[in-house]
Image (cartoon, rainbow, N blue to C red; front, side, top):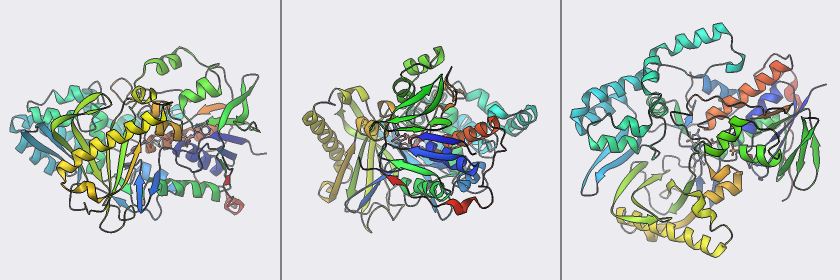
Length: 516
Ligand SMILES: Cc1cc2nc3c(=O)[nH]c(=O)nc-3n(C[C@H](O)[C@H](O)[C@H](O)COP(=O)(O)OP(=O)(O)OC[C@H]3O[C@@H](n4cnc5c(N)ncnc54)[C@H](O)[C@@H]3O)c2cc1C
C-alpha cells in the first residue's frame, strides 16, 4: 500500500512537495489556512487592477537551465510567457542637488560602458565585475540530485562545473554589498551598489549571481502574475490526484512515541498519515505546532539571532495614467528627507507593471512603492485598529506626496490605494515577522545547510524558506524536490519526475474548500 504524506501549507514549497510526492506514488493531502494556493506567491484584485505581491524575477524562466526543466516537470511553465527587462533598475545616487543615475543594464557591455562613464576612475574594478558577471552566467548552479545523496563522483562533477567561477566565489563570499561597494572609488557607484536591493548586508556574491541571471535572461517575470503562475502548479498537483484542503489551519502536529503521525486543525479535527511535512513558517512549526519539544542548540541559535529579510510596507496604486514609457523600476532621491515609521528617509523606490498588459486596463497602470519596514513598530499598533489604520493612511499619503513631486498631477489619477504592512504578510501567510523570504542571505548564511528534520522526531520533515537561507521560489522549489527524493531514497524507491504509467487517469480531484 502507498504511504500517505500530510503537508502543511500550500505555498510553493508545499505544492512542489505534494506534486513530486504524487509523481512518486504517495497519497497526499495538503492543509492550507488560506482559501487560495501560493502563500507569499500571490496577486490580488482591486477594482480593475491586479496587484502582484511577489515575483520580480523567477530563476529558471528560460529553457536550457536545470531549474527551467524542474518548473516544466511541475507544469508551471507551459504556456507561460516571460518578460525579460533590459534594465534591472535605475538608482539615483549622491544628493538631490548633485545626483547621477546609475542604470543597471541587463547587457553586460552596456553596463560596463555606462559605469565607466559614471566613474572612469573605477575602470579596473568595473572590468572585474563585468567579467565575473559573464563568467557566472556560463555556469548552471542547480544540480539534479540532492546534496545529501551525492557521492564522490557527483562532487567531482560539481567541482569541475564550478571551476570557471571558483576564484570569484572565494574572493566575494565573505563580502556584503556594503563591503563590496567600498572597492569602488566613486561615491556614486558605492552608493548605487549598496542600494541595489536596499539591503546593504546582503551577500555580494548572491547579488552578482542575480545580475548574471538577468544578463543571460534566465530570470524573468511571468505574464499573468504570481498567483496565475503558482495556480498552474496547484492544477497539475490536483490533476494528478493530490488533495488539498483550504481554510484549514493546522493547530498542532500529533506525535506518538516521538513519531509524527498526523495533524490537528484549529476546528478540532484530526488527520493521520505516515509522514508529515511542514511547509509553513519555521518558528510556528517548531515552537507552536510542536511546542518546542524537538530542538537543539543550533535551532535555538537560528531562531534567536539569525537575521531575517525585513518585511515590507507595500503600497500599491491603480492609476489612470500610462507609465509604459517610463523605466519599470527606479529609486529616487527626494529634495527633503521625509518621515516613515519614526525614521527619516531621503529616497524611495518605484515600480510599475505596464510590461504585463493583464494587470491593468489599457492606458492605466499598477504602481508599487515598497520599503523595508520595522515589524516591531507595527506590532505596537496591532491591537489598536484606529491607530493602525491611521498609520497606514499617513504613510500612504506621504509616499503619494513624494510621487506627486515626481509626476505632478498624479494624485488625481489614482483610482486604487492598497497597503500591506508586515502584519498583513504575517496574517495571510503565517511567516514570522511578516518576512518575505525567511533568513537573510548574508556572507555568513550563504551556503549554510539547515537540516530538514528535527532532533528526536521521526517521520517528520520541514520544507520551504525556513530551511533554505535566502528563500525565493526556485530555491525552495528545488529544496522540496530534493526532500521528496530523499524520502523516496529512505523508502527504497527510485525517484521519478513523472507519474507512473496510467497514474494520470486517477485525477483530477477537486480542491476541498472549507468555509472559514
Ligand atoms: C513582495 C515579495 C517579493 C518577492 N519576490 C520574489 C522574487 O522576485 N523571486 C523569488 O524567487 N521569490 C520572491 N519572493 C519570495 C518568495 O515568494 C518566497 O520565498 C516563497 O514564496 C516562499 O514559499 P514557501 O512555500 O516557503 O512559504 P509561503 O509562501 O509562506 O507558504 C507557506 C504556506 O503555509 C501556510 N500556512 C502557514 N501556517 C499554516 C498553518 N498553521 N496551517 C495551514 N497552513 C499554514 C500559509 O498560509 C502559506 O500558504 C518574494 C516575496 C514577496 C512577499
